[in-house]
Amino acid sequence: MRDIKKPLLTHLQEIKRRLLFGLVFFLVCFVGGLFLTESLYQFFIHPLQISSFSPESLLLTNLTSGFSLSIRFGFIFAFVCSFPFWLFQIWRFVLPALKKKERLPFMLFLSVAPFLFFIGAGFAYFVITPLAWDYLLSFYDLFAQGNLPAKLTPRVEDYINLMLSFLMTFGLAFELPAILILLMKLKILSPQVLIRSRRYVIIAIFTAAAILTPPDVLSQILLAVPLILLYEMAIFFGRKM
Image 1 (spheres, helix red, strand yellow):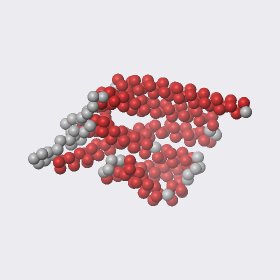
Image 2 (image 1 turned 90 degrees about the vertical axis):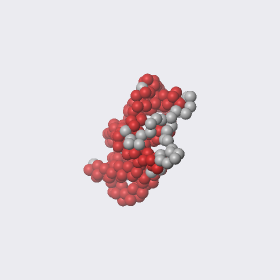
Image 3 (image 1 turned 120 degrees about the vertical axis):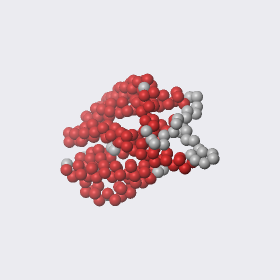
Image 4 (image 1 turned 135 degrees about the horizontal axis):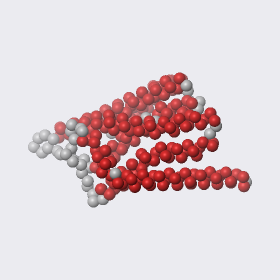
């Protein structure tokens, strides 16, 4: 009984130690993000500013809006900076439990995962959101004419939430090939299974795109098409392994 408790306590102490390291690193990044609030705000509004139908200003509706947005930007900055660090902590924790043949696939997955996430988020930032804003804002021209024209003044909180949903959705979606290749490397899936499941996966991808993106066809297509290409990429590399 004592022999069973000892490894358990050792694992719990290691989890506690790694969580503490991660939280300290996250806190340091969070404080740094607070000092970068203005720069982060400019970063987020840039895709909206370059739109042909950009509004003249954004709206802060509460006295506490500025404070809450600064806190949110701090969390966003800390998440981005600490994401690779957390993956490294996970790798160091699970490493002793992995067999030799499992270590390389997991190491490759944890190494590639941050890059794929940032590539997906970058694709959303530089390609998807400018197109989406142009498409969505073009409809306001229908209401900006006449005797009592409507004026668009979006809330900052709503805009930031929408931007975050785009960046997170595309960032996580671009992890698909790494996950599938890891499962194939571990012999849990095979390229043949992915090929046979292709039609069902395409339906599932379009369904997920309709749920995860704003309710417009353009955003859904711009998420679904890259996901299908990433799925095919995973099949291609899986067959080469």
